[in-house]
Image 1 (cartoon, rainbow, N blue to C red):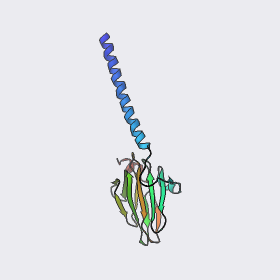
Image 2: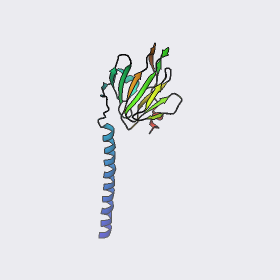
Image 3: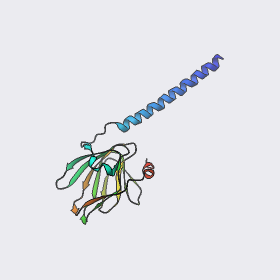
Image 4: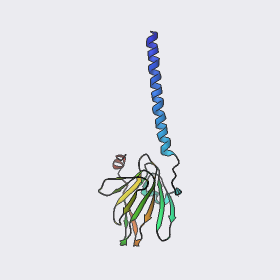
Length: 168
């Protein structure tokens, strides 16, 4: 009887330590997901002006409004912008320079492309696309607006949850 009790206590102890280790790993992942995220450029304020075109929280720090418009855009984990198109009669488009974290870029009708620091994305005018953070990572990029004639943005529908959640 004592052996059975001792084995039961050992089993309970092993189960509890296993559960504690799993909880500790989950807590580490949550902390990493919500930790302060820094890159070379300051994160900026909450991107309230464009919030209706984003799923999740983004931040915007306008670095240049002269000659070439450049914004540092930071995305919390899971944040992404809606599908959108940069229109122009001549020139135009956008260039993304990834400065931190992990994210995605996708053009309409194509597979999503993983983005990591140092990646560059050239987006011609007229191409429907979206970009944003991976589900479990902060993400930051410089968004450079390519000068052009009669440039304007068209904001479209959000990225489908099912498609976004299929990304890893």
